[in-house]
Image (cartoon, rainbow, N blue to C red; front, side, top):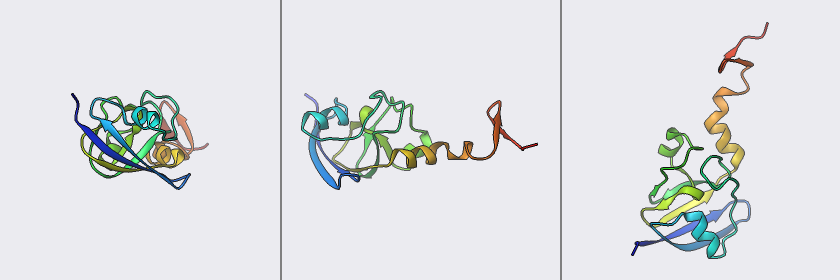
Length: 122
């Protein structure tokens, strides 16, 4: 039987806190929804940043989080749809656009792009 952890999720947009019990072998988003939490999500497979959270305390395992760079993972971001708790957690939801900008902002808004690199305007 899997160890269970207490996960406290602060939903910034709704100013609501959810506290749920999540087994180590279950995704946090799925378990939270099953316990009545209303959280943001989209793809449910770790490819976008809709369900992104900032970890305030605790640890997760998120091997399938393709939509989150290793750098952002090191900074404490996680995707709830593909995160397994590895301890009791305290997290807060993030604005999807903010996370997207943190991850991809250096590639956009710098002029035209050709073959993946910014180029100067003529």
